[in-house]
Image (cartoon, rainbow, N blue to C red):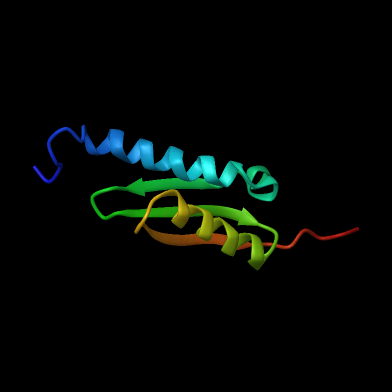
Length: 87
């Protein structure tokens, strides 16, 4: 009902948005290694990021890249920061 004609199913649109965000995250070496989870909900125009990174800067970069993947998307950044302990 809420899907514009020709847009396909919401699940297909979600997958397309998730892939766009994952592609942006893969462009950064630290984020590629973090293997973050991406969940999209096109009906709400939002993306949720989750996982663990080593710094606040990396966490912020993930959110910026996700926003750049799709104009106007809302990013719920649930990434936790856990610095690597150096021995």
